Length: 73
Figure 1 (cartoon, rainbow, N blue to C red):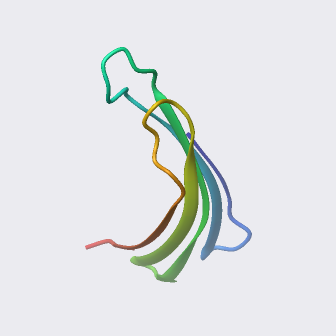
Figure 2: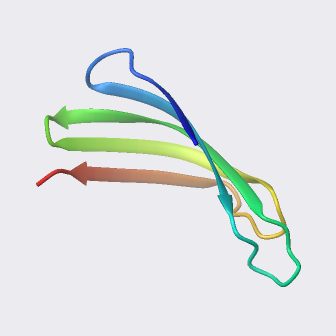
């Protein structure tokens, strides 16, 4: 699930959460969340950055950073 806010046509702030299936027998699902920003460089090119962590579960990821680029062809 994602909640976002677009203060301009090229800037997008977001808070994202997700559920991961258990990775171990009889484990509980993990919940992760992250916050970030996306910026449209051009109409078909986007840069994004986020930071997040696991919140619940036996095997969620630790703190992570994410940087990405998206292009539409």
